[in-house]
Length: 112
Length: 114
Image (tube, rainbow over all chains, first blue to last red):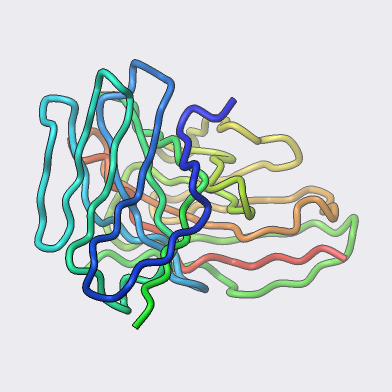
C-alpha cells in the first residue's frame, strides 16, 4: 500500500527552464511534507518542507506547493541547473510522528 | 554540521552469513532509522529507535534485527543473509519532536548477497 506516490519515475528538463516534480498521497492524516534530493552513492539530503497550514513555501530556486484537497504536492525548481540532476523523493508524516513515509522517487535530468 | 557515518560503503556477503551494518551520528540525536532503497520502491523503513535500547519495527522488519546500546550508534543485523536482501542500506538520525521532522542521512552501504 503506497501511501506516497511519485508517478513519474523520470523527468528531463532543459537547463534554465522550470522543473516540476509531483507527489500524491492517500493518507489524510499526513500534515507535514518534505522533499529530499539524492545523488548517486550519497545519502539523501533535505531540500525543503511544508506544513499543512501553508499552501506554499519558498527557498531560493525551490518552491513547494501543497494542495490539501487534492492530496497533492509539487516541487518547482526555477531556473533548473545541471547540478539539480538527481533523484528527488517526497516524504510525509503527521505531527508527533517521528517516522517519514517516502515516495518512490523521480529521477530528474537537466539537459545542458 | 551533522555527520552520519556508516561503517562500509560496499559489502559483499554470502547467503547465510550474519551481517552487521553500523551507523554512528555525532549530533546527539535521539532518533535513528534504518532504511533500504530499491529501484521503483523508494526508501522503506526497516527499524526505528527513539532511545537507547528502544526500537520499533518499520514497514519491512522481516529478516532484520537492530541494536542500540549507545545513543550515537545504531546497528542493523541480518541474521542469515539472503539474496533478496541485496540492496542499498541507509541510516538516518533526527532530533525528537523538533517540529521539523528533518532526518539526516549517512552515505549508504551497498550490500550484495551472493
